[in-house]
Structure formats: structure tokens, C-alpha cells
Amino acid sequence: MSVNIHEVRSRKDLGRFIKFPFTLYKNNKYWIPPLLMDEWNTLDSRKNPAFKHCRVRFLLAEKDGRLVGRIAGIINQKYIEKWGHKHCRFGWFDFIDDNEVSRILLEAVEAWTRENGLTAVHGPLGFTDMDREGMLIEGFEELGTMATLYNHPYYPRHMETLGYGKDIDWVEFEVQIPKEIPERALRLQELVLKRSKLRIVETKKKHLRSYAKKMFDLINEAYADLYGYVTLTDEQIDVYIDQYFGFIHPDFVRFITDEEDNLIAFGIAMPSLSRALQRSKGRLFPFGFIPLLWALKYPKYIDLLLVAVRPDYQARGITAILMTEFTRNCMKNGIISAETNVELETNTQVQAIWKHYQVRQHKRRRCFIKNLS
Image 1: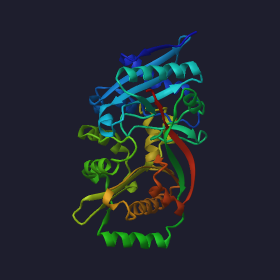
Image 2 (image 1 turned 180 degrees about the vertical axis):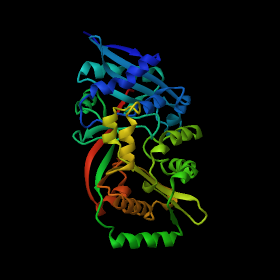
Image 3 (image 1 turned 180 degrees about the horizontal axis):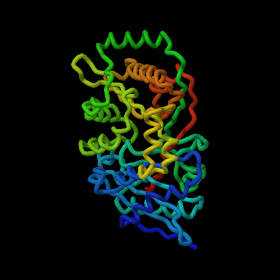
């Protein structure tokens, strides 16, 4: 039978869109289910401020009476205005291993792209850089993380068959926590802090929110030139603070300020929730919160989420200081290893830090692009 495609127009359809991967990846030991609550907050136009500057189409594909695929087409007007690229994004792209399914879903987004006078489709990307992005092309037998996408190994093959090529890659690393911090690293930290007249702020849980707005302002400044980055609005920042700051453990947050208490750098990690999310199946209630609370209280692994350094300080060894601080607190908390978030393959400044650790580059993901003109 042929594949039928229709647009999500009701809350019921959106629920099917959100829950499709739970069927597609059932019993897959590497896939990490998202928190269903977060997916609803992101994909509901009433809750996500990005819909104010993004046009979106959510599409479902059915074959033989069952759901077999989904995709989101996103036209981010702020991205187009900033970068001058007339591109449409695709995201939330999942499908069975059927060429007809992947083709029809992507062709629907391509047709919509042309209708709106745009010239290319790229992704997987979300509304913002805070959403999961990049299709996994290496590391299919590695445990995923809360902050990243996982996909079956057949996905990239479908993309290439349908005329999509590489636009940019991100890489990820597993970092083993050492038994001790090298004396040289400690001396370098002291020297850099003294020379630049900076201080490390050790924050208590109750003080985190006082830095939250400054942190996102710094992200907007430090990430401005990164691939596809679009400045976060104040309304979006407020949503992210409410959505994610409850998961943050003070031991895995460090702020660096100058003499006038201006925030010039920060790093945020969090206890890995991968195994806990698998046990909770993406639900907080009635009992899904229990493994999540346990993982937050007794962590053995952490995920490095965000690091940002003000541009005028980026060549002064500040990122290395943040990593030394994370290492110290990982040792204190008995952490075994850390998983880096996605890093652009061109970000050699950050990747140079890992040569001082026992690491393996175990995942690679890609943003694909297809020019339509």
C-alpha cells in the first residue's frame, strides 16, 4: 500500500507525533527517551515562544494503517534575517527503514520550502541551539544522552539516497575522570586567574537563578558566530530557566567573574539521566521521577552541557580552568566519566583541552543539506 501523509492539526495528532519514537525505538538499549513533558513544552505553540518567529509544519506518515514516520519543517525567520540563508530546517525526523516513507516526508518539507520562496533544506535542527540537533552517523552502539538525538544506523543512508550531503559535523567525547589533577594544570589556573584578575564563583543552589539571565546573555554573545545560531529572546530565556534549572547540581556549575562581578565565563554539567530516563520511559508520573531523583542525588556519570566564554577572553585559557574545576568536583563526587555535549568539528580550541585527559571520540553527528534551486 502507498504511504499517506497528513499534517498535525489537533492535540491528539501532536500526541501521536511526540510518542512515535517510543514505538520505533522500543527495546533499543542505546536510545534515551525524552521527557514527554519537555516535548510537549517544545512542540506546543502555546508554550514555546519560538513559534512567534517560526512557521512550523508537523507531518505524520502512515502505511497499512499504522504510523511509520514523522517530520517537522521549521522556517525560522530570525535565522534567515541573521545569516541571509533562505533555508528551511527539518527536525523531529524519524521513520521506519522504508525508502518510500523517508522520501515522501522529506519531499513534503521540500515542497513547502519552495512554496515559501526558500532555496534549501537542512537539518536535523530544532527551533534553537538548545534543542537537539545533528543526525548520528557514528556511535550507534553508544548510550545516548538527554541532550542529544539518537537514530537508527539506516538514517544517514536514506539521507544520501535522497540527495542530502554534509553541511557540518559535530563530535562528542567520553572523558575519563583522572585520579588527580596535574600540578601543571593547577599552576596554570592560578596564573590565569591572577593575570586576568578573575575569580571562580562557587554557587549554592539558592543562588543559581541570580546568574541565570546573565548566563543566557553570555550564551547569546559567545555563540553568536556558531553554525546556525539564533539569538535567544528574553521570553525564550525565561522558559529555559524554568524548564531546566531544577536539574542543575551546584557542584557541577562554575561561574567566572571579573573584578566588577561581570560574568565572563561559565560551565554547566549535570548528572547523567540516561539510564534513569530509560527506566522512567520519559514519564515523571506516577513513579518515573524516582529513578531521576536517584540519578541526580547519586551520580556516577555526568554530561557536560554548556560552556561559554566571553569573546574577548576566549584565548586566555578560561575553558581549561572550567574543566579543571569540573574535574575537581567529579573526583569529590566519585564520578567515573563525563560525556561531552556536541562540539563542532571545527572547534579545535575546546578539543585541544581533551589531549590532557584520557578520552575517546565515540560519536559523530551531521547536519545534512540539500539545495533546491
